[in-house]
Image (cartoon, rainbow, N blue to C red):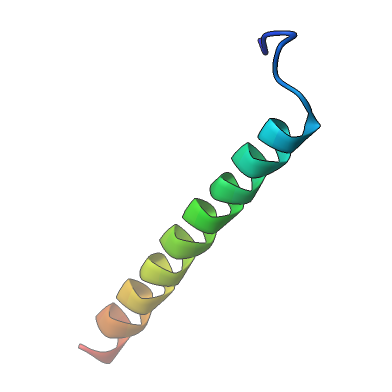
Length: 39
């Protein structure tokens, strides 16, 4: 799945980016849910 050349720093950066993306998606989904409930 991962190439052996990928080290710990690269893996941590990838995981950090995934967390940021998931957090942003969760925030947008939460706001959409609030707006839909208010309408």
